Amino acid sequence: MESARGNGGRKPILKRLSARIDKYDYKLDLNNMTLTLKLHSDYEVRLRLIASRERVEKFRGWSNYELVVKYEDGEFWVSIYFKRIVKSLNPRTVMAIDLNFDNVTLTVFTLDGKLIRLKKLNTPHRKILTHRIWVERIQKRYPKS
Image 1 (tube, rainbow, N blue to C red):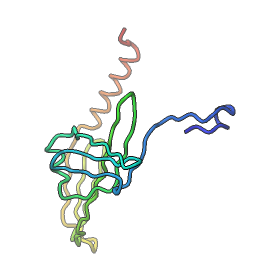
Image 2 (spheres, rainbow, N blue to C red; image 1 turned 180 degrees about the horizontal axis):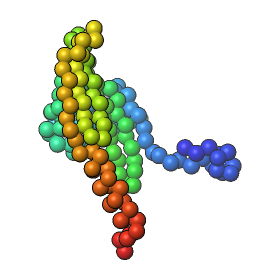
Image 3 (cartoon, rainbow, N blue to C red; image 1 turned 135 degrees about the horizontal axis):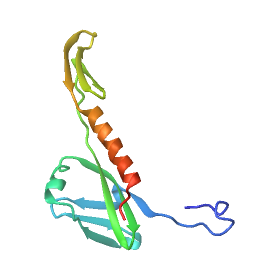
Image 4 (cartoon, rainbow, N blue to C red; image 1 turned 135 degrees about the vertical axis):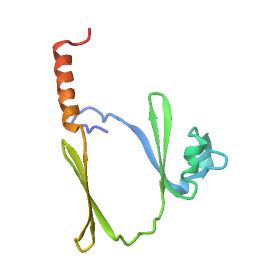
C-alpha cells in the first residue's frame, strides 16, 4: 500500500491484494485435494487444489502452518506453506567447492582439518563466457527487427 504522503496527499493505493491465513482458519484435506477456508459469520469456502497428485504426495508427512491467498489479474492464487522437522546429523567431513573459469575443485576435509580428498575437474566456463560476450555484442550490433 502506498502512503498518502508518497502519492501527493491522495488516498492510499492498494497495490497487492493478499492475505496470510493462520492454520486455525483453514482445513487442508490432501486426500480429497480440497482446501476449506473459514470466513466471517461461519461461512466456509471449499476450493479444489489444482496441483498434481505427485506434487502433493511429496508433502504428505509434513505439517502445514500457513497459507497466502492472493488476488491477481482476476484470479485467486493460494500458496500453502509446509514445514518438517529434520533430525540433525553429526557431520564427519566438510566439503569445499571452488568454482573457477577453467575448473571446479572439490576438497573434502575431516572436522579437524585433515585433507581427505582433492579433485579438480576441468570445465569450459571461460570459453562459454567468451562466447556469451560475443553473442551479446552481435545482438547489440544487429538487433532483431
